[in-house]
Image (cartoon, rainbow, N blue to C red; front, side, top):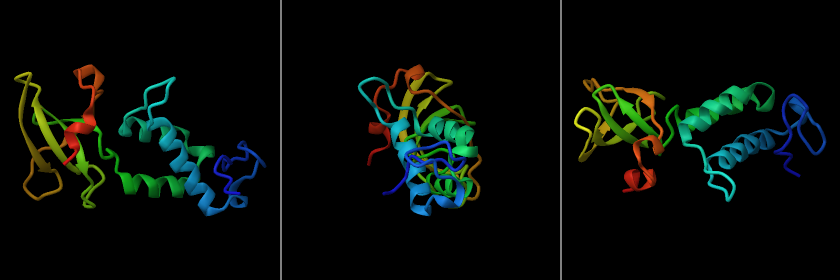
Length: 157
């Protein structure tokens, strides 16, 4: 049995295991299971965007997840996971398309909208980790607030 519903503080189920009583694989499964559950669309709720999901999971981390496993998960996904809608300092909107490995805060972003002009612009991929690139992410954005229904189309190749 995987025990991915156990929590490191012992409040999980089915056996109320805690800490080292839970296998590393179950701890990893717990983080992945929660991320999948909250980012997936369900008949009863829309999934949260990736960046919001990471933020909420960080709030729940103490007691719920093994903190080192959660930190490793975030390192893999980045602070702004692929598919996150972000606002850049340059006044553009973009979608994170790839993690660079150079910095959790500097992924590759496909920009497609000028906030200043309130208009779509020709899509361009910007690698925020490249030397000399002055732009940076200033916030995560809510796709619904911008009238975007299918952000996935924007970052797909």
